Amino acid sequence: MNADIAPTTAPHPEPTQPATPTSHFTIRLSATPRGARPARRLAAEQLHAWGRPYDTDANHTVTLLVAELAANAARHGRVRGRDFRLRLTLRPDDVTLRIELTDPRPDRCPPHPGTLQPPSPEQDSGRGLLLVEALSTHWGTTTGDPYTKTVWCEVALE
Image (cartoon, rainbow, N blue to C red; front, side, top):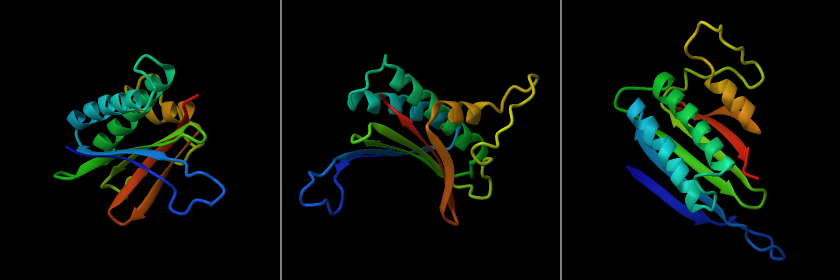
C-alpha cells in the first residue's frame, strides 16, 4: 500500500493572514472488493487521527461515503491490473472533508448530481450514489486526464 499523509499550507498566504493547514491522506488500493474494505477502514482510522473519533456521526458518515464510492470504483471503474486511489482532504477553516475516489475508467461516468433515479424495489443494487447525494453537501465527477476519472463528494463534519 502506498500512503501519503501530509499537512500542507496554502502556497502563497496573504501576509496579514496566517496560513491555514490542510490535511491530506492518499492511498492506492486494489480495485477489487478486497480493496474497497480497507478503504473504508483506513478512512475511519484517518478521521479518528484527525480528531473525529470512531463513534461520532461524522466518522460514521464518512465511512459510509467512502464505502459506497470505493465499491463503485471496484465494480464500475475496474481495469485489470490498475488500482484506485482514495484521497481525503480536510480543510479545517470550514470543517469540510473532501473524499475522492479515482479509478481508471473515464469512459464510465455516473449520472450527474440531481439526476439520479431510485432503482425499483426488486433490484439489489443502485442505491449507493443516492446515499452519497443525500449525505454529502456536494458531489460530482471530474476527468483531469484521458486515463482516469474521479468521483468526489464533500461533507461537513460539524
